Image (cartoon, rainbow, N blue to C red; front, side, top):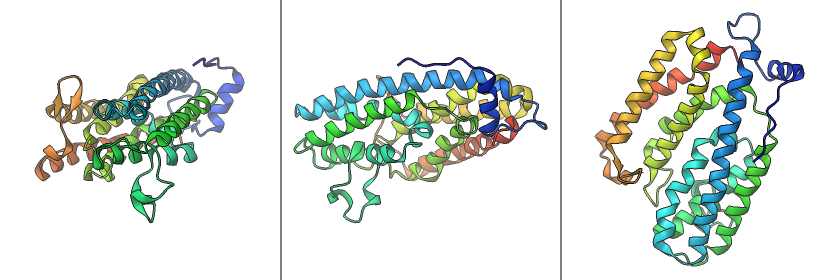
Length: 276
């Protein structure tokens, strides 16, 4: 994907219009240009990887190769989960790609239930690829459309900075209950992808955060380390993870605390960096 990352004086003005606080902040709007541009490169790389991985995944589904499709499900989704705050700006595509059965009165039987989780239901609950071909084609078309839309997307600083908190808050508020990948139990893959996406944003902003509030940056680094260490306990060979069912209630509670602490600190980033 080719990206135009040149920043003119008008570009600096756009950053201000998109919600960068000016007078009171120690961070000037121009300081955010480089990290926002670098983040767009990261997002572009992830969406490119998503399209390629989805192609391979959906080909396995259409070929009726249940074992291969199951093996590719979780590693394909991680590319979406890392950039979810950007992807969900396109609500029509986000609903089509990542909707859950709970959003429909007829649950899994609703014809409007599509995307990753509908295919997941077939692969894991039904243990079959039957009738999943059209759903696979739609999923690939949707992620390809996402790739096209992201190419021309302007990323407001507030959305990028706030996206780090969104990613981790989603784990703490909903995903840790196990509702995300309820058929495959590959939830830990999504947790790690969300943490990776948040970590990328924080890493790009690190020089600015350290300048504005060094103590917050230190806490963020420490909390990321704690959460990542817990997730590593459940990792398997080949960069995978155990089934979420393998975690006891005590294990999930032990994970919730550090995730919540990380989310709370991430929620302070926008204020510290002066973006709205």
